[in-house]
Image (cartoon, rainbow, N blue to C red; front, side):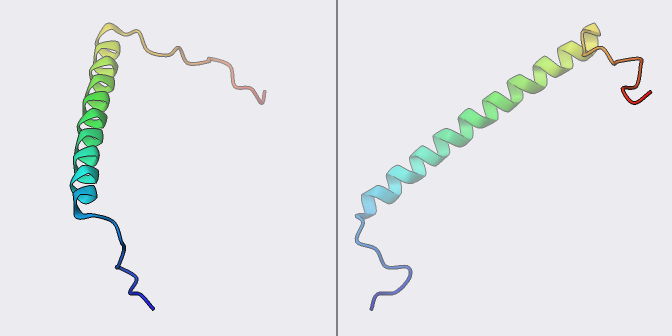
Amino acid sequence: MTKAGDNDKKPSKKGSRTDRLAAALRQNLRRRKGQERQRGAAAVSGAGPVPNPEPKGS
C-alpha cells in the first residue's frame, strides 16, 4: 500500500505548478482590478443600469 501523499511525479512538476498558479493569480488580480475601475468609472459618470420603475407582480 502507498501513503495518500505519495506520488510518482517529479519535483520539477511542483515548481511548474507553482509558477502556473502564481501567473493565474496575477492575471485574476489584474482582471478584478480592471472590473473595479470600470465599475468606479460607471458610478462616477452615472452610466449604471436603469432600474425598472414598475414591479412585475402588479
